[in-house]
Length: 311
Ligand code: MLT
Image (cartoon, rainbow, N blue to C red; front, side):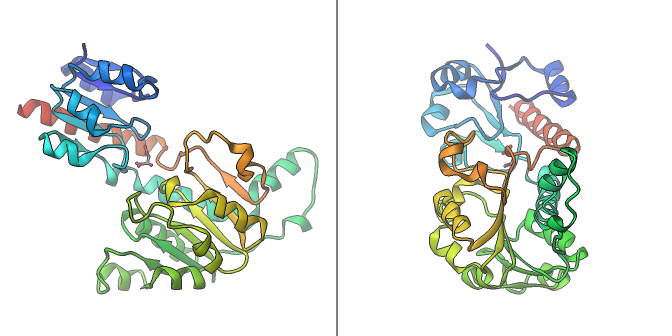
């Protein structure tokens, strides 16, 4: 039985380093099988997960030797952190290590929407040369609304400012006099005001009881006609049915989603999202760059080793 169990595909030099010091076993598909997961965790002193493994309170309580949970990523919505804390089990995540990758994906989404890059590339590859169809728009001068102005929101703001975008942000937890607002020339506004003034709305909130479903029919109806919506945070903050309806009615002009209500999406064709030309879908790859994953795995492996060494 392993000392450290990796419950999703987690590999590379940092894992090799960890394996030289502890007995590490990677079961990349075990997250799909709750019973197998429970059995495999019985003797583990540590588990390292990505976002697909659901570490419920029952599961955490049943792992009697567990000392530390490593989360190779930022979001903790798949881990019952309250149960872990009550049992004295440390939880280490890596929010600082992958933010830049997510921010760059968001910039890529905006440029993709502005110039319809996938269609321009695929029609040209097929022999077309339709220049007039691809008369795009510029990001310069547009208003970007960042819902959530933490680490990732601020990285997006810095990059969007360099493109000449005007930036407004909404964040329940940021003080109105936070220095970063002045530094980046960002106005902090209410959620509904942001939806009303922004040409592009990008979501950067964690999944919590408060944020679940916050982008619903009411929210989309408040957005400017033809505006764009981006979500590289968590799928469950968006009501996909409401998004589809607002795309069909052309209230929303385009959407880019890296995350989905259910992952992997089970009913891609039923929602209609996947077949819409103005919808750009990616498979939760925001944090997936070589550099980001190197940082993430180095940090999570070293934090887990530190906890185990202390005991
Ligand atoms: C994160 O929370 O760090 C990203 O969504 C990537 C992931 O979940 O692994």
